[in-house]
Length: 217
Image (cartoon, rainbow, N blue to C red; front, side, top):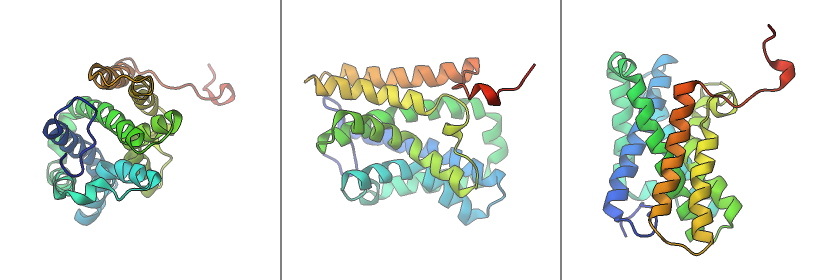
């Protein structure tokens, strides 16, 4: 198995590696753009891109007690760094294709949720913690980004982001915990995550806030 790759059973490690690198790059773009909007310097933009692209997997690995996989393969750092540089120099172009970036971000979220849950299960973590760790793999970087920018994490305020990740990870965990290694289930889990995320974006679906805090007519 290639270093730094969390591979669902039945899938080609090289394919998953390149999908992970693509997901890291797209996540890095969201971090880099947020840093540019916050008027951070070049170093800050690259750092925030790396945080969003890599932190979710690093947090997961630390919680399950293994050295972070992304530190064992320079390509992950290169993908995150490239995303930061592109964000710094090409923000106007990226803003014009913002919707496309969000679509690729949704695919990255689904992939990371499934591969994160897979790795947690491989290390003997129970079903519920594995689902949480799968979601953390997908959303951890974005949450840390918002904290560094002194904002309440977006996943706690609006938009369907954490819930799709939890659903995708849950499909993967339930299938493996029931003894099935059929590669259909990782695809199904990722597809469910992507579908719910994109539906939320398309129709403006948000998790409800407390009734007392809703705007009054």
